[in-house]
Amino acid sequence: MTSSKKNKILIVEDKQENMDLLVYFLHPQGYEIISVYDGLSALQKVEEEHPDIILLDIMLPKMDGYEVCGRLKKDPETKFIPIIMLTALKELKDKVRALEVGADDFLSKPFENIELLARVKSLLRLKEYHDELQSKNLELAEKNDSLIRMDRFKEDLTNLIIHDMKNPLFVIQGNLQMMSMSMENVPPEILKKYAQRIERSSQQLLRMVVNLLDISRIEEGTIDLKNDHANINEIIDKIIERIKDYPENKNKEILVDLNSNLPELTIDRSVMERVFENLINFSITNLVDEGKVTITTAAVDDQKIQFVTHDNGTQIPKNYYDKIFEKFSQTEIKDSGYRVDRALGLTFCKMAVEAHKGSMWLDLETKVGNKFIIELPISGS
Image (cartoon, rainbow, N blue to C red; front, top):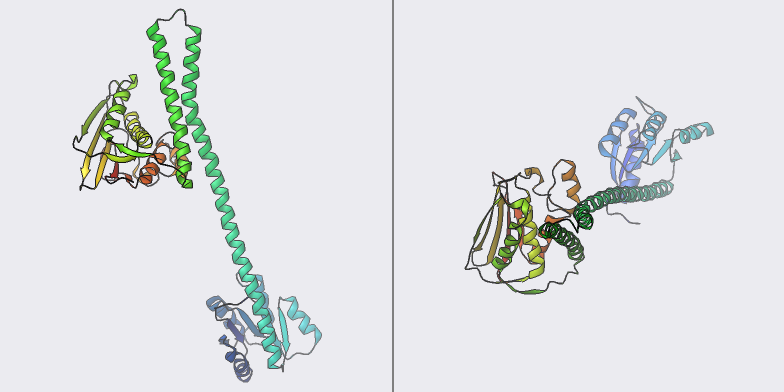
């Protein structure tokens, strides 16, 4: 293993002649040398410089080498810095004590320069292995934490989507039960109303499923857009005509201003129809009774066509404007007490628009309600 970093050696030696000798041996090897002459200065220098290895004399003023070594080895921040104790003491007990306080190696004075360099290189190599292993462990821990968070997000999001899908299923099941219980006694117009509710909920459920499938395909880069020429005003008119007939919308005002001179776009009609329907549905559903939504189309710089829905309903909190289109932010927004859309409808819209080389955003300058803007290139995708 090689390292481009210049290894830093701290020498702690109170005698100048010994210090000069150590520097003389080590400096030509390309090491960065730091010198101090007492134990207290050694501790301060370690904190300031973070050396890669320490050559530590035992007999030092202010604090001896044993205590310096013991303190460094007890500190989680410095315990893995290799320490070579330098000693003129010959007793075995002195060497044993050096090892007991945590020294990684020791050299008896006088020492050979070859032995010094060999031990320094050996411990530096071990230090590099340790640092690399520690870095990898930290990286793995961060990735593991990220995976745990992502699994939690996925589980929460799955539960949210399942909850959203249960609503239309509940409507379908309930109306089927009502029909089966009263087929003989209920006028045809009431049965027709049940059937319409079932049809609408079925379409809503199907749209959720197809949106989720398209999100997955777009993320994987496998969506196959069936592009063809289409007039978006015609698409929008049909959606509005259908939505106006819903009983819950009878007191809501829908203002439409579609530019009649727009050129046709090259788009996947089915995909973009669901985009427009999702947005219009969101805007109208977001209204309180007797609220108002304005829907417009316009040309922009002869390069783009702009579609806008602006409702005067409950405004999405500004701090969620960057998150409302993000898949894994939906549970966070819901937990805050605000539901943006059902079954990732807005996530699908933005991803589908961008798959057509367009852009979609929520206007930050809007003072009342929510203004969604879509721009699509006239030249097609």
